[in-house]
Image 1 (spheres, rainbow, N blue to C red):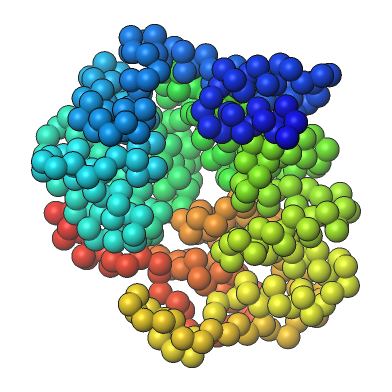
Image 2: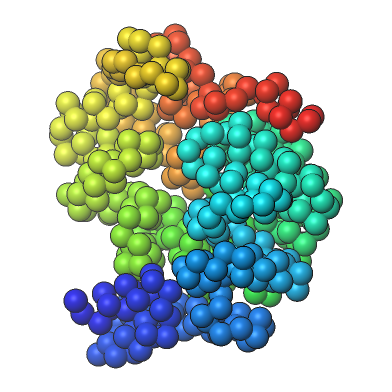
Length: 445
């Protein structure tokens, strides 16, 4: 293992001081080494600032206390952070919630219900997760920030856009310090086809320590809406502040603008830190394909699609690659998987096997397939994610009539139908395990 690999491993383990020393020891440096060193130094600085602000040694951070089994101490520290700095408290609670790091608490409380909802979310129990979060967030005004996760479930798991939008509006009124709620609201408005979904984000004031993630998120929203010039300004600044997500999205912007060499430099840096980042892998493969480096592009997509069948835009790119390489059979197979599945048995019963699934491909010429795939990429603008709510945004941009809850399983169904292509008549229902009426009942709406 060389110093670069060892530094990346130490960085990913949160051992920033050791990572800095490893990156500094690299002879000659290079672009990857300089980026990693800059990011490790910034992370180390943030880590030291957090310790200084909390007047606590590293061994007493919540994660360290949890590892030692001191759950009560970790919760006391989390409460203390919230009392002094709600923004930092929210980010820490978010990391613990997403990572499911907090064990079950013995006494019923808002915090106990909050962390139990994480367990329910991970197991796909959306009804239970919503119920627990609703109870926790309404138990006291001081816990109203927890409704951010209600909005997340409504949006990303259930595709209930209008309900999610109402949650973010309440959040913004009750927790004006929570800038993440405004960015989430912009995503929902984009999915709903609002004329100016990002209005207000340009005037939003965020804490200086939150500037990097805010600029990265706003830059991503601009990328997905097709405003590459504005996105590049935000992402350049976010990258200079050490935000790794911004580096991926800047690589996407540069690909959209035709700067493939610079785009690949950014994307390679992202993949050096996280070799399995699906968005970076998809954009890297697309940049390589546009450069004519077809075999390299195909090799990257094979691994991604083997790991994730839902990588929609990776499949679009691979179908185009197969056409470029003259492999019509493989191109047709990928194209078929972009059409909605045809089920031989009912697939909607969660406690039973889905039954046999087949995919029907319209009998199109290679030229027609290529046109549809390239138009889909063009109309998707800067989107290469599999989020169903963002898919709704690009379908609207394509001028396709979209139902209220488009299914991610339906893939390019709406696009194909809009172009008059033959597709199965059955529409796979939306991804949510809950209907809108049931969600409203749980949330008391």
